[in-house]
Amino acid sequence: MRLLLTADAAGAATGGGMIMVIYIVIIVAFMYFIMIRPQKKEQKRVAAMLADMTVGDCVLTSSGFYGIVIDITDDTVIVEFGSNKNCRIPMQKSAIAQVEKAEAE
Image (cartoon, rainbow, N blue to C red; front, top):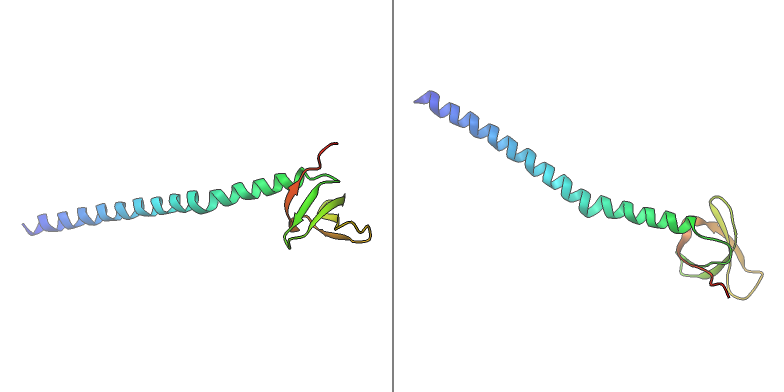
């Protein structure tokens, strides 16, 4: 009788460990679909937006200023703000939050 009780206890411990592993797998899958996957999609969208940026596009900077792209290099952009031709500021591409394509007239 005593041997039977210890065998049942060992079987219950093994089954409990398997349930714990299943819970951990479910939690990791939940974290992936809720946190990691949307962040990667957003990074791809921003990278595509910055890659499609051309001279003459209207941009919104992360500080809230609208401007026109004058020149583009590898990781910097020169943006002209307002109607004043003397207000041209170089900035990093990562500082651009939104790009509006220039319409052909």
